[in-house]
Length: 332
Length: 243
Image (cartoon, rainbow over all chains, first blue to last red):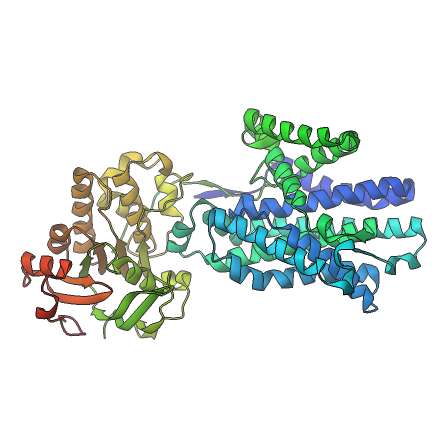
């Protein structure tokens, strides 16, 4: 039996990815704050797409409540800086804090299956939104500003925020790649295909689901914390809003559910559409919906899935190609 | 020492007590059929033994170890192979891949399973999603065998299958048992269960109301216990079973 994991193209692309990250790190030296602010938004979209894909595309956990962790991440930055922690250290701590909060939440929502799980996660997000809305110490319904980053000159602050966002995106993508390529990645796909079947062949179902849920919560918390540092202001209705989940689903379905590269492609498409048409009011949202419907009808496996079908390329392979050569004879 | 010993087990579904104080034992090589009407608690009991449902009381001793707190995947590693109700295969994998993913070292190999379940041999390269019900069940049993279990737990093997498919499956199961498998079978088909297994135990409303050797119990006795017609008049076999 032989197992193929890397191809020549994927090895070359992995090397090129490291080069792209280095070039991206140099962007603040070449371009102004407007560009870095836009790219920071793109990094947030890529993180969100990758995390939702890990949850739904690999583990079959279709959550529509990841905005809970986005909001927790954003508000945790405010709370940590209120306690005297540096703003950028607070961004990293906020991401970890979101992961910590996800563990007790997982005990509750993992009792639910399928559609119940999806609605359950949304309910959890709404509960957090209401709790924050009713807490005047963090601004209540009108939200809060992040004053702690005002110690930096605006151009420096934008560059630091950009670098933190780039570092977190790289770390989270790497963590996601390593996780999905590990034995746990195979376990998650088995759970996605059939949880009872996975359980019956010895897959640690609860542990595997909890690990990916934790990773996604850390990622979404990081996205919220970066958004907080990028925009410097937040309201509960915007940061805990369901639109985040709509964006995640859009990016992942458009790019290719259950592929590592697809959600990044989906994030790039959404970012481009946002930049071009965001000023078009409600027609922008109608356009997003129309694009999603058209792509899922024409390319059911997403844009990346269509490219894989056409050219059989895998840039970041997380799966195994198993070839059975001979079957062993049973012996007593 | 018994391979499996269930002592005073109680399992709840919320407020509903599905299994009430059930005790029995299985020796290595034993075959026991758990029969009973819908809702009697058979599948819940089986899932509790396999680790899919946490009991509220009692003990489950496997080998020499109390496994009541062990998660399902560790019970598989200890040697419990569950064939869940409803088959539950990996639909995107082929029959062969479904079998190979479960492989653990031991007597049962891919070739051995295909030999015991001849209906799978011509379908080994077919995706599980396109199999017939009987082929899916055979694959599910084969997959459990590929884990080389010390105890094979079978839940509702014949449920929803055509008679001819059930006949094929039971013929294969006889082969599996002849090769020394220890089997705990949950089944609603009394006749087939009694013909396949050495012992039969009947559940009613969560309790074990009848237990004995298949050859010593009459079909009428089991049927009456099955429907609760002579519940008070029938004694449950000793807790050690008929060892």
